[in-house]
Image 1 (cartoon, rainbow, N blue to C red):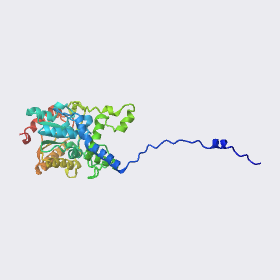
Image 2 (spheres, rainbow, N blue to C red):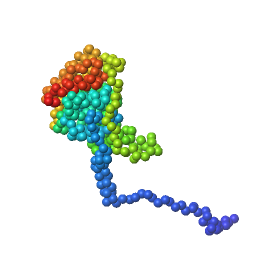
Image 3 (cartoon, rainbow, N blue to C red):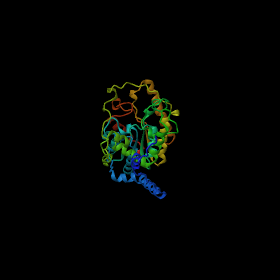
Image 4 (cartoon, rainbow, N blue to C red):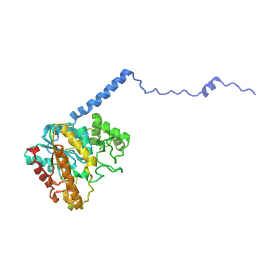
Length: 372
């Protein structure tokens, strides 16, 4: 039986319907247009940090210290260091001993140096958690303005009190400011970060634009990158947070200002490291050479460490260690001061003085040649 031919109208009905595809949004750029975009991106990278300084007012003022929550904002530290170097004769540099864990900003070492000398001559350039390996990176990459000044550099022996504090342990553990330490050489045994993060740290400290974007994250986005922040705040506009208002100078107490023995701290038997193989001591020497190489007149303060908190055997080892530190510094023509231990009740813990301790230490430092 022969099949009847399908009418043309029916044949048309069986055909697939015509679908209109959306036009492509892709834009093909010419070589010249790519050059324009590259030039714009380069200009943004070079000019944005400088323009931002005009938009974001920053006046440190007396007894300024970096807000604790912005301890990882190295771009702000660099900005503060430049202002402090322009306005002060003496810059006090170091870790939380300089910053002041147990005191307010008007009870720090730099404050008492100013008060007792009768002039606003000193600035607090302490950074919380800045062990020598981190401090060396901070000074190298963000402390370029510290040049041709008088500098008090505090050597906190706490970082030599064990192989862990000295970063020598092979077992990985979290330590402060890993972005500032050497990323590839010399090797830090406990630092196990992957290559991509190490490269990112190198870029951040060598590219001002990258350090500036980190500043925005630290100061305005709860110390998170913007994509992470938007995930946690899906209904908020990131731009409205950029109000160009920095937090004020930190005036907080990180710990209650009570003597160490009232806080339940027991005497310690620290296994002090040998200077010859110490990573932190080698880093501290780098700090000294870097500051001297920039024409600074340097005074290193060894301590003041809380010897009252040490077990007898550990105390004897420490006393020999601090004398060895002073001898090595003086052998390199570096002026140093080894202050007498403060009264026991003037320490908050192993290395942080209380207010009365800072005042007593300032009295000793004002007798040195640096302040005459």
